Length: 359
Ligand SMILES: Cc1ncc(COP(=O)(O)O)c(C=O)c1O
Image (cartoon, rainbow, N blue to C red; front, top):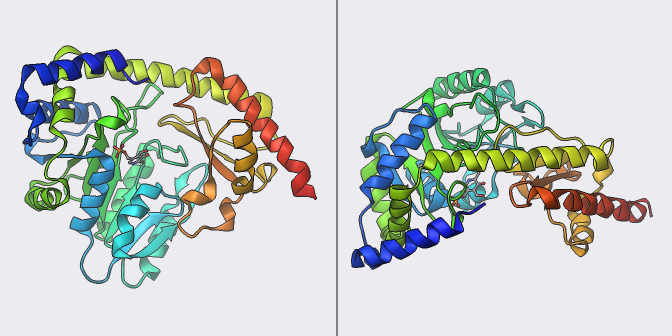
């Protein structure tokens, strides 16, 4: 799904058109303008001076943790299962993590979050979430739940790092806007070109209140000086000739087919053995059920059959046994024609594994 030919042409033009592509450089204005446009598609009105370019969403998370985690009393509210890259960004600061129970069907439990915040000493001041196309749970919270969550976080004065890297990849008619659409000051937004153009470009962005931008610039310069000029020029050159909106439509149409095919094949092969939700956004499905056995052990059996997944415990903040029989599988990587074979191999691996479990 990566636009190989278009990016290859864009790269050639970027180098041919200007030797400055090979130099250190400042953020490209055109890219920021396109980001303002992408944010508008997400129902967020923002100004170009609130947009900050980063080396992928991952660097955005890392810089925001450095910026927003207080030097004392570090305490961060997270869901029980979380994108491991965020945990890695937190690790150097060793904060206290306040995990909140997340339901596999309904997502984050707002009452449980309220209780966890009240119990926690010190009180968390920061919360990280992916409300749309959650990685790994693949859930999208409803707009109504967004309101309840935002009300809770404002009441407790907790700043949100909202990771919306899958927000532009929603597959049903009505896209759910991000939390940032509800609060300008309480939410710092993270987006990325990784999922909509190519991850190797390593270009992402933050939308933050202007008061944060100077401090982010200082942190970023200390980290990697500037977001790779060549990548920026390739994106700028791509945008000059191609519409991002058409590209998004192509991605959504193709990923929707992959998602539907995977769902159908799972129903054929794993109905009664595992449960899952058909996701409305993102790249993943989250399988759970005792029939899966211990998925960490299952992985080596599956890899012998050349099918891959991530065991659910890899995402658990507390490495809880609750996730022993869970896994994240991805529909984004596998063409629809190969999906049947992938699911058949996964189901066969689960069957292979069962006698040994019984023994
Ligand atoms: C939820 C989430 N956030 C951030 C990232 C990192 O994205 P990037 O490639 O832009 O650094 C990923 C990548 O898989 C992701 O799934």
